[in-house]
Length: 124
Image (tube, rainbow, N blue to C red; front, side, top):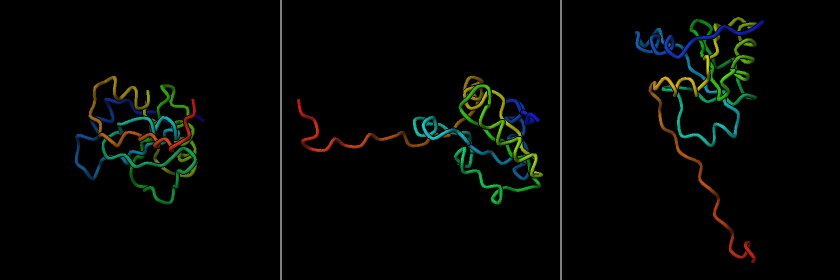
């Protein structure tokens, strides 16, 4: 069963409403896309694709999961699994790329930092 989807515009409208009606937003991007990005959706919780802990999620609010794939492969699979467990989960249509293309608000996070080169490790 495919997971329900929510569009970027629908989510934006939901986030403009009263705070107690806001969905919980969960960033489930794979490790590499997450670590090499400097943006997240406003207020997003980070739970890696293999580390979604339903025990920490509310059953009485919508949960919107997003990833970096425009086809929502990871978020759609995880949202479908949460729905089967009785949660009100949705995948963000278009992922974070669709959100950014729509020029909707994002939060900035630290960029990855390269490890320093060890002395003597570069031999020419």
